[in-house]
Amino acid sequence: MIKVLFICHGNICRSTMAQSIFTHMVKQKGLEDVFEIDSAATSREEIGNGPHYGTVRKLQQVGIPIIPHRARQMTKKDYEYYDYLIGMDTANIRNMNTIAGGDKDGKIYKMLSFAGSGRDVADPWYTGDFDATYRDVVEGLTAFLEQVL
Image 1 (tube, rainbow, N blue to C red):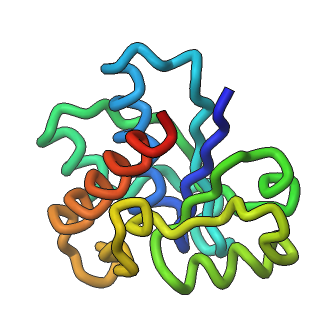
Image 2: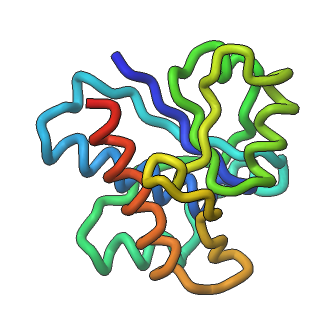
């Protein structure tokens, strides 16, 4: 079982989008038994809240089911448990390292690094552009899935 945790600041926009898209991709390939997929936040601001309406709307537009989820904060135990902890931007990576007490096992990655890019995934909380975020997430997830398999 490959355990993957997607992480962003609040766990209502980008990481929940990645969780739903990756779950959909895995199901389409018949690999549900290979992956365990979840998402979390680096902050406590949105704890308990569901996915942002912009994320829900974008996934509905492209026909991807939204995974029922309530925002939660990443923990040090998450670092120990998951094989891949994938953050959406440079600030997320810094905060993930702080929560984990460093990345001694080399499990923390930035999403678009799998696609050979150092770019951050656009944060629609600030940009309002869920289309750009969707494109970034799909680009990163497609490359991640290819590398993992």
